[in-house]
Image 1 (cartoon, one colour):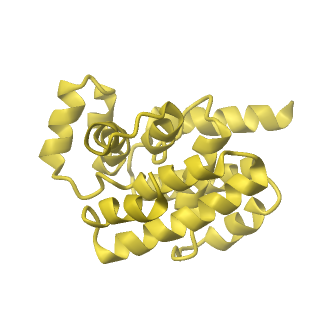
Image 2 (image 1 turned 90 degrees about the vertical axis):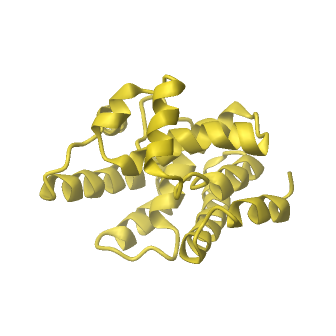
Length: 188
């Protein structure tokens, strides 16, 4: 599927603000993919569809998680996590994208997980640092991303987990596992 067609499909599922964000993620993911050796076309496609289910009804997403036996553990955590695994499933069903690498990059762009591929990491980080984002710490992560994908991810995860802890929110276990894996690999 070409970029224009993909953007046309996704635009109907997003607010204007989220569409602008998606375009920023797309451009950032292509740049990161080029820098770190991921497939640029797959990065582009995964980025375009990463928020495909972002504005689906929460009850619809909950039902999909339950019916499709997606991790039931998801339902215990913030519903902001749901659109990624639900989105991967809906992108496959509704859009017809069957590439497992693209679908996994969509699936794990909110939580991360152990064993993330370069493409998975690129989409996760591009979502965090795209140029339309503005929050404390994002500039530091953008600078780190120019030198090291993993160092940038570690800082992004530290920022995210600190933010959640300050709000007394639970942190999804796969996010901790992703962070721990990056830290342990850094020591090797």
